[in-house]
Structures are given as structure tokens and as C-alpha cells.
Image (cartoon, rainbow, N blue to C red; front, side, top):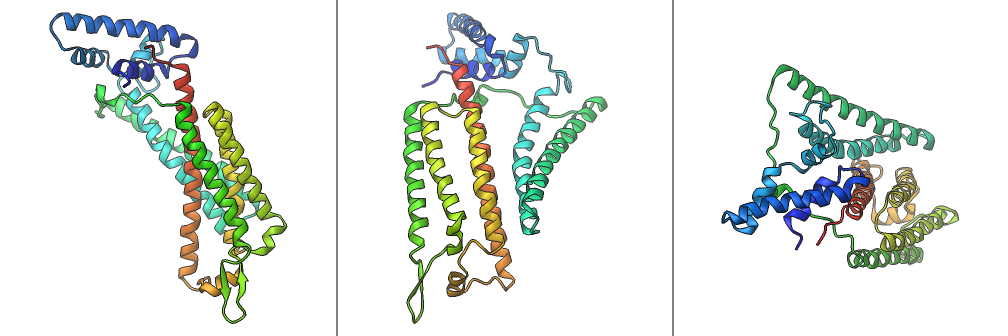
Length: 324
């Protein structure tokens, strides 16, 4: 089990420059050990002594800022950490979902590919600027007016777990990813030979439009093969920032053409829709299509966000290693 001390040092070390992390971790561990020993000598249980020592140190981010003499004065030391946490929380929700909404709107409107990309990127930047501006403005007003905002008292229970970046965990992800990709590619090839049959003639009807075999289906299969190579790379090295960028590019390269083809009614074989009675012409058809499109966008947005989140966590874990 990872000790509370290891978790505290890891949490504090995330915001310390890499060149100072080893020395910072050593000094902080000694400081915590001395505080624990003093409490144990006075008759306190060792686990309780550790919890008391960490609670006395307080928020790991504030401890790190004090060590590197970094002033928490963008908003003011009283509210800086509350501002930073709220900014991260709102940004991680508003940015991916807002960007997905802009992308969906552009696709539904039938905009050209260049306009879709440009509007999505500019919209994402606009959302980020607005989140930063309005959250900051609110805290500035609160601080200047003397208002109170809950600072969020820190406790030992808030310490994050140190991420497990071992090969055993990555091996499980690799096997699952390769198995899923193999099944996906097999399903794409299998459906070409008929998912349903037209009554009477027993004519096999595929799910995907056969015209897509001229370019788009081989394109998607190639992307799936690249996804397999990507999964092997993650297994060998763990998540890194270049791999997170590659993950984002591959997700966008897959979901944008797929959405465009779907909303243009070119992805699925019209004969298949006719047999199953897909209601494109009714009110329900566009609603179902929109729900499916939103699900695709949100799925891709989560995959992209999760890639960068893992890269950040594993990168920090590699740089801040607890001593045992």
C-alpha cells in the first residue's frame, strides 16, 4: 500500500520544477518524518502521527509554492488555490462539451470541411478565453469587495492516489485494445457480405454503403490498424505527450469523416435503411441521427481528454517517484 507520506510528496511535487523535485521530495520526507517522530515520542499512534503531521503541513500545492518561493498572487494568496481549482473544474467540462456542440452544429449545417475545422478550433479557443475571463473576474470582484468564498479546507483524505504506470496494467489495456480492433475490422469486412436480406430475392444487403469501398472504408480500416500500432506504443512507453497528441489526431481523423458521411446520409447503405424502415423522412429520423452524432462527438472528446489526462498523470509519476 502507498503511504500517506508518499502520496503527499507526489501531490506536492507535481508543481515543483523537475530539476528540484528530487531534493524537494527528500527534504519534505525528512520534515514529515521529524514531525511524526516528535508525535510518536509523545505517545501518539504512528498512523495518527502521520495524519497529524500532514494535516499540519496543509495543502500540498501551498507547500510546494512555499518551497520554490512562488507567490500565489494572480488573484491573491487567500483565494488563489480556490480560483485555480474552480478554473480547472469548469474548463474540463465546458471546453470538450462546448467544442463538441460547435462541431455538431457545423456538421448539421452542411458546412465545408475547412469551415468545420476553422469554426471548431476558433470556438474552442473562444470557450477557453471566456472560462478564464469570467471565473477570474468573479474572484477579483469577491476579493476587492471583501466578500467571502469558501476556501475549501484541505484534509489528508483529499490526497490523490499515485498512478500505477506499470507494464502489468498496460498489458491488460493492450490485449483489450487489440482484441476490440480485430473484432471491429472483422465486423467491417463481414458486413459487406450482407447483414440483412431483402424479402423475396434474398439479396444480401450490407450495413455500410458499398460505394465507400472506393476510399472511405479502406481509410477507416487503415486508421484502425494504426490504432493497433498506437496501442503497442503505449504499452512499450506508457502515455506521453506526443502519444496523447497522436491519439487526438487519430480520433479526429476518424470521427470527423464518419460524422460527415453519416449526416450526409452516405455512411449506411440506403437499401439497408429501406429494409429496416429507417425514418429519415419523419420527425424521429433527424432526432435519432442527432443523438447518434452527439454520442460520437462526446465519445471522441472523452478519448482525447483521457489521453492528455493519462499523459499528464504518468509523466508526473515518472518524475516524482516515492522513496521506499
